[in-house]
Length: 195
Image 1 (cartoon, rainbow, N blue to C red):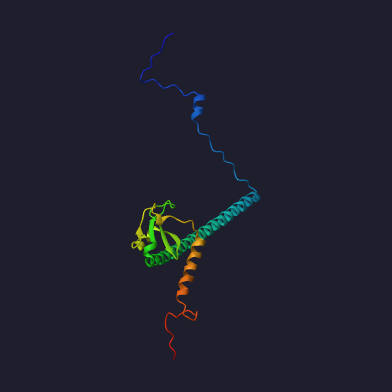
Image 2: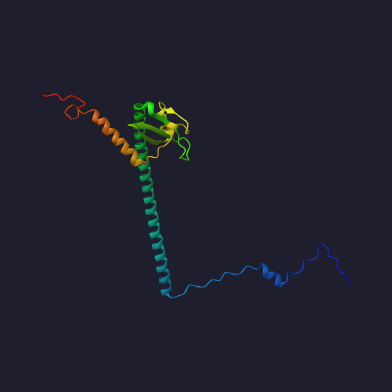
């Protein structure tokens, strides 16, 4: 057997059919549209139904988005209203603390995970009352004695919110009794002048 040495100008070997099939692109199959009108009518109806369904879903998505925007606006309004109420509460608590400087202390709040929260302890009428103070309102309590959480004056006596407000109402009643005159009637804050 003699082996042939290829020369540079030699023609390439033809591609074998089985190998050529690997690289052939399939021809697209085109089916001619049917000549009958009912088929086209049915496709048109299906397309119109699909477009109507897509439009319905679009309206529903737009409606959902508008509802979500209104809910977010309402939530922002509620948060602003709540923060305003807490700000007013903090102002009143700062005032109460100034009225009871000997029995009022403030300490870091061990029961809130966020930094900066404080606990205000106030004793009025012999009863302890306490409130959490948000970090944004801390500047209002610069006049209050700051103590460590281990200080005996900063030890919670176990009162709850209901009990705290009952204690406040009881203290208000005691203060109101001081303003009663000898006849048992409240003394007016301003004098009533007869015309």
